Image (cartoon, rainbow, N blue to C red; front, side):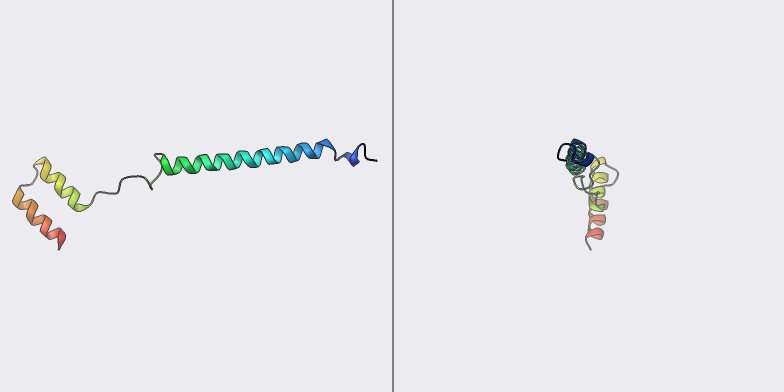
Length: 80
């Protein structure tokens, strides 16, 4: 009676162990993907912010595309 356990002996333990192993593998993969998403190149969270219009204006002034007077006027326009 106890010898074969109606066919549920080691077989069910084996499937239980495989299920537990698969569960922990999925948890570890999930953690790795989460860390990769937060720290990796695919993360919008860690990317630099989009350039503001003032940043673009400063770059244009630095490249010499606009002079100081035009820079000052456009800066005043942006701030108001």
